[in-house]
Length: 621
Image (cartoon, rainbow, N blue to C red; front, side, top):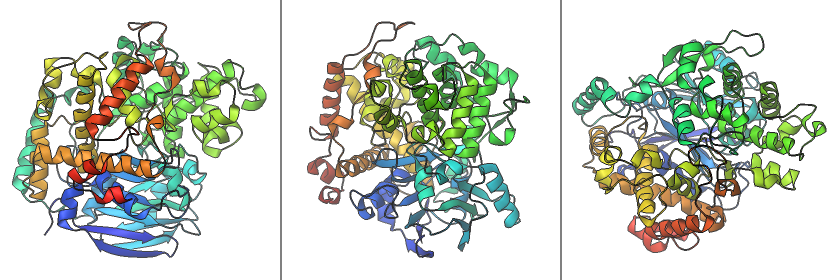
């Protein structure tokens, strides 16, 4: 018997309307662990090279990890993947909430969707009762309404729903997949992939406890975390949440402002965590099994920018992307923008970056009032930002262009426009400026998913002995300053990044400050494997190299592992004014990183490296 996983996958052919059950081998599950590992395996095995990501030949894959659904802090996450419509490469977008745990409690580890339905459908799962049902009446509806309609249809208010909004239906390449109406698998355009398959939603209900090898040990660890998490790095998230980064990044001089032209925002105190708590927060929210409660629920009673608590509240990425990035210091606008993106199913980072790019183009004369449909698209104009969100979701006017991401938009606008984009591999950079943490820039540049702040390390946390204490089991024995871009920093980045991928395999939330040894014990208790930190770290590297190999097969090379021009320009003010790494420094660090990873000069894993990881078959594809 398998533990941690059920050893079962649903294969749903949307073209034929058929559903099949496939068994997952125990040795295979241990090798690839879950999440990103499962997704990368099937992408390499079953997605033909060179396909259009929006064609029926692409796969849409839901995958859990061995901790997903277990009664322990951080076990609420799952991942969605496929070939990215936004980047054309590997996509793996993780999300918390309750859906992943519900899918595992229904008795399933994975869902693999292939083909495309001729008309809108949704997948209904109630343990072994699995059906494709018509969704014509749901098509065009916003996410909260869809969730409530499905629950009413099945007379069950505890059904968990994963779905696309109108943006995904309209194939906006920055569309996401929304869960519980306020949690998003936000990056890489998975909403457009889901929309291309005419799959409106997946609705799940389960009551089975996932199989656990050592439930007493798991319960002991869950109890320890509940009693001690305030003493760990998780404690700060329970008080100030992710929005604490507004003040932190502004103080460091790296708070993305006006499309990354600046790193300090004069209105940061109006949108910081403390102000959000004191003015618009009505309660805190959490994910499955988690005592941290880092999520914020807000309410705004305003005629122009109303905000209903059912759509949650803005986290740091959204607050920055809809706030300082656009030069906006009005919390009403930011919270309303968050609501719209959750209702429409839009990635807040990609949406904010697309609007910021357009604002800079407008202010520098590359876009006119005729291009914007009469909208004064200037930094600080909250009304204009809200108008553009509607247009992007509906793909109207300039919104049709911005819905494709800034890389495609810049090519269409022409002139100097490409110099105003801040993206990697077609995916917009998140709200973390590498000019105040040099190693982070290396991490987002080499990421197979395009700019991704979640599995790149953040140097600012590893500058002191206290900061690296929990990383010592990974071989990181000395702290390094944020502005170090040496071979030693490249080595640190490699160690931390591969461990961060472990979170994407296991279903553990990285906001839970389990040490590497504790995580290994968690996996052992869930699965019964005699696992170790080393085995899990290698599993992270295995998954990472599989994702890189997929990209290499699709034509990606070293030229794609590059930071945008803007991030080589010094910031004009603040603590780091005038200071920045050079292109030559960056390339030297990238080349060293390639060598450390066992990749060739194009950033492709060598056959020897893949054989060493036990996946020599990848070299053949």
